[in-house]
Length: 95
Image 1 (cartoon, helix red, strand yellow):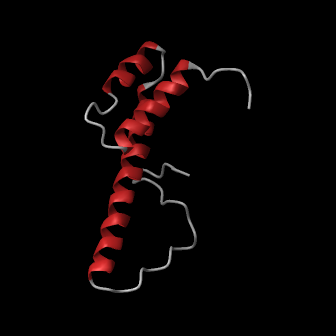
Image 2 (cartoon, rainbow, N blue to C red):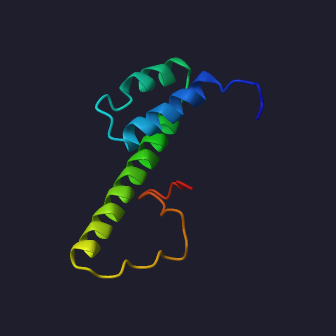
């Protein structure tokens, strides 16, 4: 691992995504202000928000599905093609 620290804008992007994906009450709004101050484009911020929401929603759907399957004592469905995730509605990759 490099001793070079991550650029603050990368840290803010990761933090924003984690806050959204984790349903943190503060939602990463302070990171949005920092990202704008660092000159990160609104399009890049929007892409990170979209990806984080997609991962959060996909995780919730999979948990709900597993719960529903356990409640009905059915075997869980196999994963589709072994993909780590599906793309967002606009086609953004989250993998």
